[in-house]
Structure formats: C-alpha cells, structure tokens
Length: 324
Image (cartoon, rainbow, N blue to C red):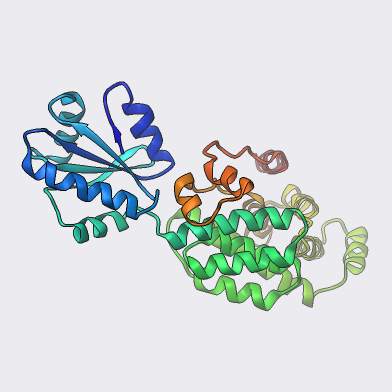
C-alpha cells in the first residue's frame, strides 16, 4: 500500500498502473466508513498476492487529485475507490462495500492466477522454442492454453510450432475456437493471418513439387498460379521471406491478381512474423505464481517496448513500394 500525493501521482499511480492494476482509495481521517473499508482493502491486497496494488490518497490533504476524480465520476462522497489500468482511471465504487462485493469489482479488472501463470508459461515457451527445445515448448504452451483459454498468444505460438512440425490437424484443432471470431480489427487481422498460415500447409501438401513449380515459372514469369503455389510451400515451411519474395513478384506484375490474393497473403505473413507487445506481469504476482527463477522474473518485470523486427520492417517497405 502506498500513499499518493501530487509529487508521486505520475510515478506511483499512473506509471505503476501500466504494469499492474492500481486501486486508489480516497479517504479522510474524519470518515468512519473509510476507517472500516481500509483494513478490508489491505487484506484483499494481501489475498490477491500482488495482482493489484493498493494506493491511498487523503481527500483533505490532496484536494487537487480528489476533486478531479470526483468530477470525472460524478461522485461527491467518500470512501470512493478508483481503479487505474494502463495509465487511466477505468472504474470505481463508492462506500464501504463488503469484501465479497469488492472481490467482484476487482475480478473485472485484475488478472486471475491462471492468467498470470499462463502468460509466464507462454514467455518461457518462447525461450525454449528459440533454444531448440520444441517438445518442452509445446508442453508449456498446451498447459498455458489449458490454464487460460483466452491466451491467444499461447494459441498462436502453439499453432506456429505445430505447423513447423507438420502437425496440420493439431494446428487446425487449436485454431478452431477462434476461427470465426470478430473482436476488433487487429484481432481479426491476426485470426485471418493464422487461418491463411494453416491453409498454406494444407495447400502445400496437395500441390505440385517445388521443382515442378520452379520449372513452370522459368518457362513463364507470369505464371502467377505457380508462383503462388511456391509461395504457399515457403509459407508453410516457415521460409517467410522466400514466400514474400515470390508474392512480391506477383504484386509488382499484377496487383489485382485473383482478388489481390498475393497482397493479402503477403500481409498475413507479416502478421504471423510480428510479435505483439507482451502483457505486463506484476513481479510480485509472478513470484507468487511460482516464477522464482531469475530468467522468469526478469521477463515478468519488463515493461519496455519490444523492438521492431528489422526484417518485418524491410518487407513492409518493399510492399509499400510495390503498391504505391
């Protein structure tokens, strides 16, 4: 629990809420209900084991802070609690609510234990996959998805590894629950991209061999069907830049070929290659979830922005040049 003033408002409330939810308790010495609520909140902070941070602000001593929040939410009484997530006040409640009601409020904004463990296992699986331990990485991702079916990055990473192993049916089964999802533009783009990734492996299994396709392209540079088939083989096998090179040849010669199929597939490959920003994981919550080894804690504590992949940036520029 921390006390908030104008001096630490930005660092200990706004910036802290970028890493974990922060519940701000607005109270005063003369307020009886505030004194009843305080110990309940402190107990819940302990109970939630670092999954949210409790902060307090004295309404009489920090009137600039409390008046702005009161006006924002249209609240004129205390105790008044405001939840900060991602640097913004997102919700609140008024009065000395019982613990069960506050738990209901917290659970709308605070990640569950399963979500945190799932995220940690996803991060660990990425390290294992990079080191070549695919079998353990697959097991970690399967467990991460079982603990939190909403962990889409675990799902996407699992699909990638399964496709790399040629396990088409397994990848299709993991993809099926989100295949028809429509939850915003970015989510739809990612779902569409991985759908095309799976389709590429299915197509590669049924089409001509790379040698046959290369011969067809050599005979006719505008054999776009052969180029696209070859790109699908490269895409399915994880040779992403080779796939985009073939697709770029189609785009430069005929942007609208087959309802812009080459461009759409090229964009899907860029999406598959792109890594979303990792979710911030509170170090205390990570430790409570069992992430007590040094590498995991270092991951859990990171809040910096992941650097762009220079290969992805390069191929985005290539596409832009070809289109415009």
